[in-house]
Length: 256
Ligand code: HEM
Image (cartoon, rainbow, N blue to C red; front, top):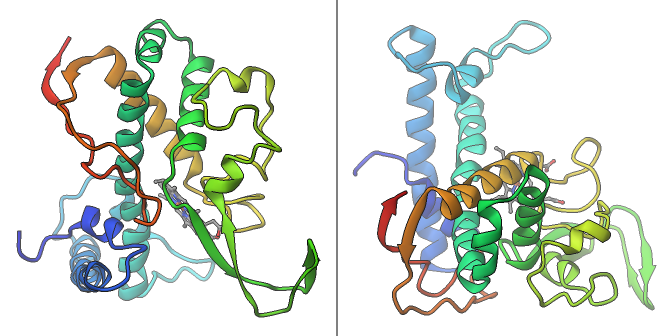
């Protein structure tokens, strides 16, 4: 609809070059206007928005008691909403994982909380979302004979690290039970970046993603039945954020 935010299309334009990226920028400008209007409505009392991200951002005051300027508040609102919508891609990967490993659909129906966590970790390890991220070198270092100088651009291979045979046993196998014996280190399961979210740039939304994914996988396995019609579920790692070529089409969805 004209003038309404299109978060899913913005997510899809994240890693693109060319028209998909230009569309992402266009939608971004439109969405920023939409977000600024929501902030202004809340501040002027014209909105009945319930407590939640928009109201929290609109009424947030800094240490000096000042509200955020409207532009920054709008951007912060988008920074919360867009990655939350991005989690839909993990719901697609959870549906794929259940389709490709049907015994796990059965197992999840009787699973305890720990097993559901392990399933969600394994979806995040096994399926790509952002295959790699770029960053600038802050301090020179050498790695396997390659010198990195301050300011150089470097790519971190998130998908490759999540599939490193030196770290993971049978990395190509979808196996949530691996986490019964393999402890997670902040530098190996890195779908959301490496290190710490507190004093580094690791994604602060990782816990939210994990919780949404646990819930979505549980609902897919226990609260509904559906079929997957013939489709192309191959993953294109050059399409960022990655997605199966056909999406993941569910047919005959019914509640149980
Ligand atoms: C679809 C699930 C998500 C994935 C795959 C994801 C992935 C990432 C990655 C790879 C980074 C960069 C980490 C780095 O530079 O080392 C990042 C940063 C960030 N993410 Fe997420 N994210 C997701 C969901 C979310 C959610 C739900 C939120 C908040 C509601 C969020 C907020 C952020 C923010 C604010 C940063 C910047 C952190 C910083 O630079 O300090 N993300 N995310």
